[in-house]
Length: 197
Image (cartoon, rainbow, N blue to C red; front, side):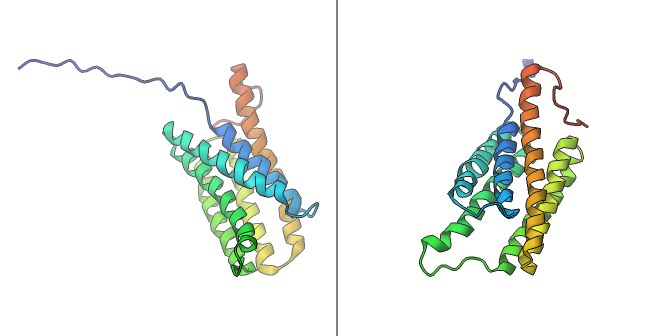
């Protein structure tokens, strides 16, 4: 019998980092929605458009790109939150588009937000092995979902306004984390600290 030499072939990943796209899609859309939640302007097509295309589609694309990079956390996070934005827009728009279709009552909407809060809380545990910047994003997002749920369950607009301000901070932290990754990669050093673990 002949012996066949086996060689290990290493394939270098030369694809770009999709995380900044996902973080920016999430962060910018979150800031704009929560300026509404804080009481500065009503829901309009600007928020819905951002929810469909940047918060929704761009994050799903980032999640698919993370799958290609074998990143289960990134795939799960970006695809899920992209779908969150798409479902949120659907909850707002479908009752207006389809005659006789009723939108969620406050209790149902609160349950929807609680489920996203639980999911985000578990994902926060995953960030404990990642960076401090991501830990802040996911912890503040967990708090945001539960505050928004409390606002829906109680009908207390003041809670929703507080959630809006907290959501602006959450969204800004995601924007910072995404842009920091872009700048750090361009300059080849840590220009913007992320608190790597």
